[in-house]
Amino acid sequence: MTSASLDAWRDFAVRHLPSDIAEQWLGLLRPAVRLEIDGDGDGDPDAVVGRIGGLPRLPDGQDWPVWEGYGPLSLIASIDCAELPSDSVDIPLPSAGTLLFFFFDGQLDGYASWAVSPSVRDSRSGARVLYVPEGQDAPVREAPAGLTPFPSLPLTARTVMTAPAPSHPRAVAAFAPGTSYPDSYEHPICEEDFTDALIEFECEDDADSAHQIGGYAESIQDLVEIEVAGSEAEEWVLLAQFDGVDEAGMIWGDSGLLYWLIRPHDLAECRFDRAMFTWHMG
Image (cartoon, rainbow, N blue to C red; front, side, top):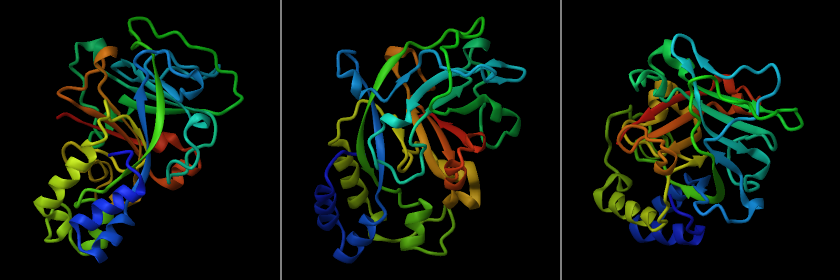
C-alpha cells in the first residue's frame, strides 16, 4: 500500500490498464490507516493514535483475556479511535473509545500453542478484541503473573489507499463474476506485467511495517477473508492487521502478520466479540 495521492493512483492505473478497466479498478480501491512506530519517541505527542504493546487500560470488572487451558493473552496493540484520521476508513469504526487487541503469543508454553486458527473452534479464545468506550474509568491493569508485557511503543497514523488482490471477492465480482476461489481467471489485472508494476508502485511507500486499520488485508498466504469466512468472505472486512516488531520482541514466525476481521454490521454495533482472527507466516 502507498500513501500516494489519488491522482498518482489514477496515473498508475491508466498507464497499465485499458481506460474502462482502469476506472472500474480504481473504484475498488479502499482507504486505510497505516500505523507507524515513532521510533525516536520524540514526535508530536498529539499525533500518537495508539501503542504497540504495553499494558492495557481495563475497566473494573473486565477480566484480562485468557485462553482457557493455556493462559492469559498478550496485549498486541491499543488504538484510540478518536485520534485516528477523520473519515480515513470506509468501515464503521467507533468515533471514540479504545480498541485493545490481544493474542496468545506462546511465551507461557515455550511457543508450543500458536495454533490459533479460525478453523479450530477451540482456539478462538486465543485472540481477542476488547472495546473500552470513552468515559469509562479504565485504570492501567498490571499483567497477570508470569506474563511479560511487550515494550510500549507509540504509533502514529496516516491515510493510505489499498488495492484488492485479483482473487479478492470484490475484484472477482467486478471482473469475473461466477468464478469460485481459488480458480483463476484471465483479465488484465491478473497479468504479470500489471501485478509486478503494482508491487513496484506500492513499494514506493517505503513503509517500515504493515500495521493497519481497515482497507484490504495484506494476505501473505491464502486470502484471510476466505480463511475466516469461506463462501461468505465478501461479508467480512479487515478490522486490523499487525506486523512483527523486532524492537518490541514481537516476531510472528517468519515475517508473519496477525489479522482481525469483522462483519460491518457487527462493527457498527460494537460487537467485537464476533471478530475473527487468523495469522500468516511469510
